[in-house]
Amino acid sequence: MVELVERDADLGAQVEVRLDPRVPVIPLPEPVPPAMTLAEALLSRRSHYSYRPLSRQDLSSLLWYAVGVQRRSGPHVLGTNPNAGGLPTIAVHVVQRGSVFEYLREPHALSLLGGGDLEGVFAQEEFAQEEFARRADTVIVLSGRMGSGPAKYGPRHYRTAHVDAGVAVQNLYLVATALGLGCCAVAGFSDDAVKALVRAGEHDVPLVLFVVGQPVSGHNEGA
Ligand SMILES: Cc1cc2nc3c(=O)[nH]c(=O)nc-3n(C[C@H](O)[C@H](O)[C@H](O)COP(=O)(O)O)c2cc1C
Image (cartoon, rainbow, N blue to C red; front, side):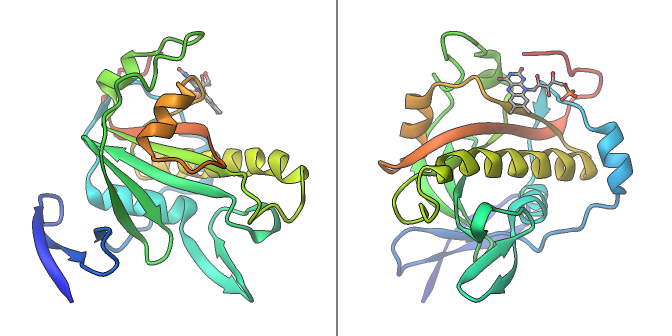
């Protein structure tokens, strides 16, 4: 049973919300493959610091091609991004215009966690990059799942989770570039603010943020 609750401006269609489970799940549109070649994406990739709004269609293509589920192998759900041991080591959240979502790799959808804004997120003392909060339209949060569940490799899991986040960030950079988007990875953020924003579990550690939107041409100097 589904209920129609909101009209999505990007899709021009109504969004379905599942009543059971009770958390609203918002399906993402069919991803569109980027046309740019890998060589072009590698050579033209740059960090951008000003952004216009990101459409739901571009968000869908970005998430699926960068960190979406590609296939299964036994109990493993495998993505376009490789993970150590094929384990679900990285949680992906999206903060967009006052709403916080968890990206559900299956069934390629957003789960609405609730409201939240970027105030305080970029106020980490050593970096003080509050400019990002004003300019960002969409922020993707990559968190390491450090809990005992995926810790098949013991303490080494702590190390490989960081590598997995780096791999995912590079995929995000290259797919965003190939889709013509502007983006920037951000390591300078307030751990506490981000944990509160994404409702992080006890063993979840935000590792890197990825700010993304339509690029503002000629404006890619640092925040
Ligand atoms: C893991 C990672 C973290 C980063 N953190 C920040 C950051 O906190 N603030 C920032 O302005 N840029 C950040 N950047 C962007 C780098 O400064 C940028 O990649 C570098 O200056 C090279 O520029 P380019 O990406 O245009 O080639 C980060 C990049 C990476 C890969």
